Image 1 (cartoon, rainbow, N blue to C red):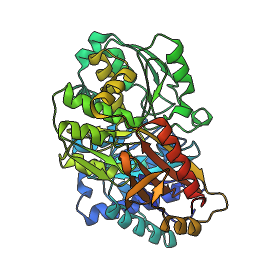
Image 2 (cartoon, rainbow, N blue to C red):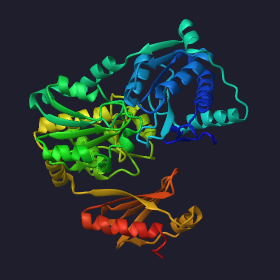
Image 3 (cartoon, rainbow, N blue to C red):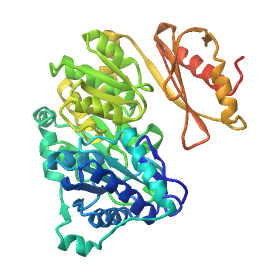
Image 4 (cartoon, one colour):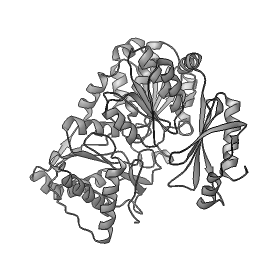
Length: 475
């Protein structure tokens, strides 16, 4: 295995090549060292895993190392959604959590996410400290461990079932009576992930007619990433389109990301869902507060905020920055274009289950499809259309790309560049409320290209110009 590096959401790698038992033990020891240095070890750690290959075994290795450092583990009894682990950290006032998950990544990947005692993903200052210690141990392994039997005997391991506590709390945040009254017909694609028995059971208990797909374990995730984007939800989209459904819902492998399909089979981009829910919570629920979005997320939420005179917080990519704003109570809702969302008073972590239930409540209470709700929102705040594309770099090197981005033009697609921002990439704010963001992927030879305009034709011109800029065709 190579060096250990934490990305926007933990340490991830290909199973057996990068992500190994030895690596998990080393990273867990580095986390144990951090906890002891910051006096958090005595609070114990919540440890969980999703449905990926060998997840429970990797989690057991983490438990053994924590026990070897006299840190108690609260180990989930089965695959558990990421937001549920975050909730359990807060409920138990634990020192943090270790979650064995690679979220929406392809089946050959697994990962380890460390969450702090606040329930939010650890911030870079923390993960850099853990990363440094772990890489030092790659040269000279120095971890402590106990067997699972010894850990149990010494009271350093407690198996937990967090379903009831989480779902009962979640039901207090959702208008379940409105959902029950609407008697909705809902299709749910669980994508072979950890959410089975959570959202499907909640909606069935609320009187919905629920048809569930892919609600069993498959380490290959059906041969595709468990990512609830439009390209991976063909079955759900067709089922909703051809059947008599009110709504289609999907969750990724660890249930922190959501996918939403309208009653006519139209996939609704997460960007629009965040804005619709922000508007709904103020206009219908009568709540107040600001919104946080990542730099790559639609400015439609900004338009909603202006409409209600609420503040907007722009964050770097990575939900941990939004989670921090939830923890401090600064926002009503926070979200990112990659389908992460949470709200004030809930966990400071992406929660796809919460997002799906909020959308279900909105559809139930408004009595309209999501397309109609989006049309109404556009009438109130103006229309925004947004898109993300991956541009293959081909023969262009990172150095070539850096040079291209140093010589940015004054106009793109006929739109004047009003401001250029360095945000882990280049974000160009253009006239007419348009923008373009260019971010290099940290793991693939591609550039993430994000754009937003006021209509589809303008967006197409903007994305075309963005592709040409990345490939060095604009001088």
